[in-house]
Length: 113
Length: 113
Image 1: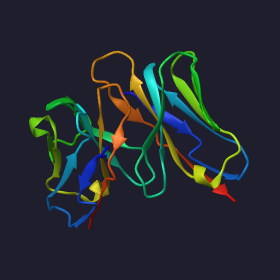
Image 2: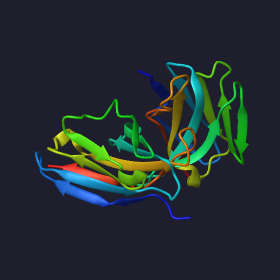
Image 3: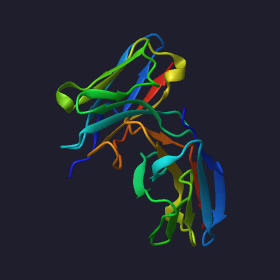
Image 4: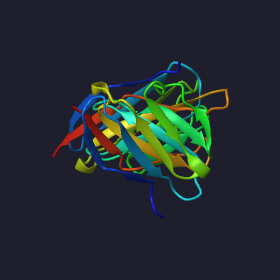
């Protein structure tokens, strides 16, 4: 089966610019996650969707980050404006249901200069 | 909020030696998952433990879930160079309805051939 698709693979921007990431989960997976992974650390949950509804966004910096999952399938994560500390890998993951194993995409490596 | 701690942060072994990483949660968990992330890769699901005191084996890997469902361990017998990577535990808090999965910081395993 096809895995979780993410794009772009790499992105370099200057601080204060905006950037968007795209994710297409595995077909039929109801739950979609966006994680931020800073080098040398574990993934940190930014936002979790169940179909097109938000389940948890308690760690999403809402003054600059936004995410949506229209029609309960694809999702986009946006940062505006970016800060230096946003440099990280942004991982999208999906699972069949809320309490099941996660399948991760290859991630987007963001560098903010 | 819930915290998941892992030790050690790094472990370097000679090929053939055993390896163990430990995971501790600040709160009682409903279940715990383990993931492996190869250098430059994304996390890949290894296993999920649900029951108190549960022990599961996958070839040379043995996973345990503590009786109190607050700690877990992963033991690798006779390490091989293919075991290189970062091992993460991820716990779901007991209670509530958001099924939030919190990752530890991981243990980086390197194996000297």
